[in-house]
Amino acid sequence: MSAFSLLRLVRLGAVLLVLATCAAAYAAAAPGAGYVALGDSYSSGVGTNSYTLSSTCKRSVYAYPYLYTQTHPGTSLSFVACSGAKTSDVLATQIQAVTSTTTLVTMTIGGNDIGFADLIYRCTLSDCSAALDSTRANLEPRLGAALDNVYTSVKSRAATGATVVVLGYPRVFSSAGCFGTFGISSTERTKANALADALDQVSATHAFAAGVTYKSAVGRFIGHAVCSSSSWLNGLNLLNTGESYHPNRAGHSSGYLPLIPAVG
Image (cartoon, rainbow, N blue to C red; front, side, top):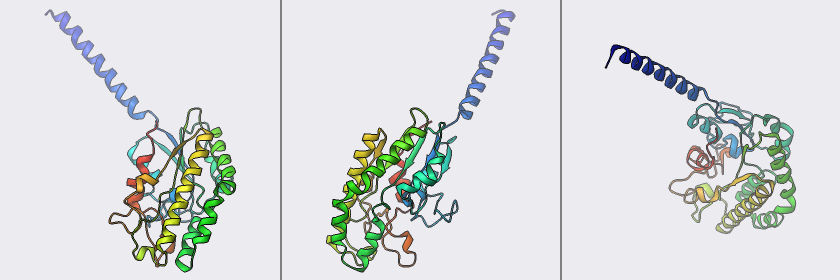
């Protein structure tokens, strides 16, 4: 090989090295998802016992929205989910975070509209069977239109082609009882799970109608309910009742996080 040819090869190699370096730098700098996490306590992280992101709304670094950013570098997170939020709160105080640059939205919503937590707390004090039955029978007229409004409003504000994911609620109870189900009978646990299933179905139906993605949490949490040997949900906590009947840290990392599709 002549000296001239060798020089050309060296120069070509240098150019290829520069191009490869630039491509790698561009890939590293490429933006990830513009992610907005809406919703209630199941999204904010209540149950994880750490609320350094917001003590008022109970937002946690152990909640699935924050965990998503740790496993998807470059993701820009607007974390506005708040404990106690209803569908009306999403529309009044949270939806402004969704903009034309938002490419991913997640939410859990509807549980507070039907007073699910209050129902379960009532079960610990008295018979709640009739209330559970009544709530289940009236889910559609009580919640359907509100879900439609939230889902369609969020979708209309996000970027064209954005992924909007509605996450469901799990069954809180297994067939077993323990201190975590103190005061709640086997019949009440069965009816509470039936209500969770009905809410799952109503949410899925309205999400489909609105053209957004629905991810049920029921199947994911099977085997990990309150009183199971590997529980992803807190049972009754007398020292901090607000933590009761919410996903713990494992519930967010192993239960909810895998339900979110990678975007960006």
